[in-house]
Length: 284
Image (cartoon, rainbow, N blue to C red; front, side):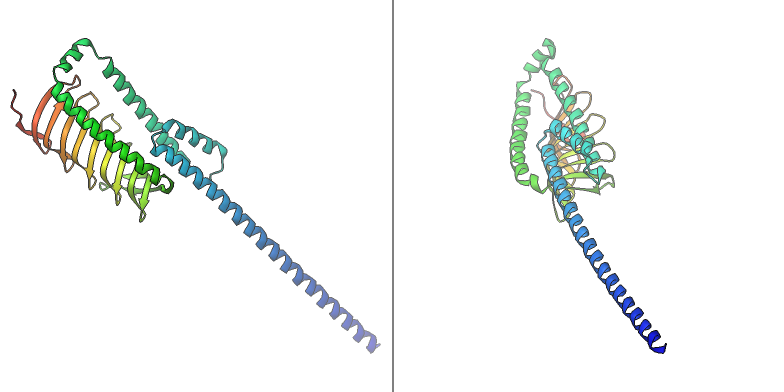
């Protein structure tokens, strides 16, 4: 009887060992399968992220080239595809393209209005050919700058970045464009929390070089910047049609410049200091 009990215990122990080995082997196989599934999922996620980045690069390239209509269409397609985990990236670009399209329509409308000006205004403007020549010279200079800018865009468009930071005055903004050292460097577009927008060149998160700044009240500036301030030659357009063409320094009219009314007639011309005319040009 004692022998039978001993043999029974041995058999039971062997069964327990066999079951334990099976359980360990099963757990090992389960862990291996989980690891393979995790690796496969990571590869799929990485592939999806790369595809998303390619789409964002294509979208930003359209923005930088000024093709706002196609950029808006692509933004809508990406939003409706539901492939982006971070919808804020697409929502931002939808807002940017909508704002730029609206702004472009306003500028086109203003241009058409100027082209169909009454005959009396055209005659009045014709008597100011000297002033017009100055405007054309500035326009030519700006056009040449635009051509140079577009050439740089084509080289930089595959390295565009998106991030947020604050202006020197503390206003948050969204930025899309060229960057280096995690800062805006090169050509880029920004939308400020205040509703204003800037298209132009940057240096270490500061507006620096040729650029255009649009306020949400319809006024805008086109010209040169230095250390985040209007400095150099530039034109300021008021929403009522008035404009100033001339020199700037430290964000104010400083140097020689001319102020025109909406009909194109010179209302003030001379040397300016801190936005005030201090020395008028002599009338001939």
